Image (cartoon, rainbow, N blue to C red; front, side):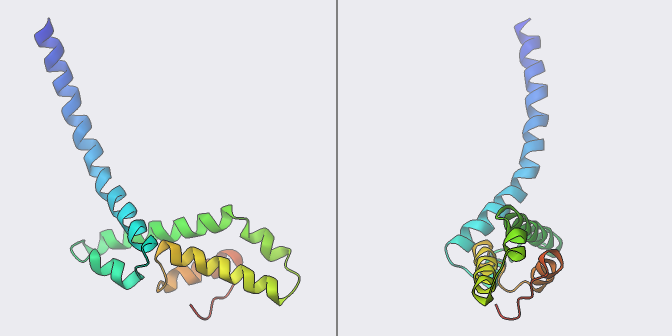
Length: 128
């Protein structure tokens, strides 16, 4: 009876551990990207540290980072801030919030992110 229980547990644990390890690699790359960006690394330096990763995987990671930035800007209520702006100083504050979020995510050189922000919020970021 105990032997059957051990065999059953063994057969359940092995597939579960391989399933979780496949997703862990992407999670680790995402957290590694964030750690590097929060230590002040630029996007080029971060991408260089991922030089052993395939281009396809790096693009998936960058897409995830872009989505992260857009979602954080939505969560902070950027659209409401844009609609309530009263003067040029408000626009400068909005621009600084966007640039800060981009810097924190380590996506300073990503032109596609700038285009997505322009499409989502109607804000042009000419200089980064």
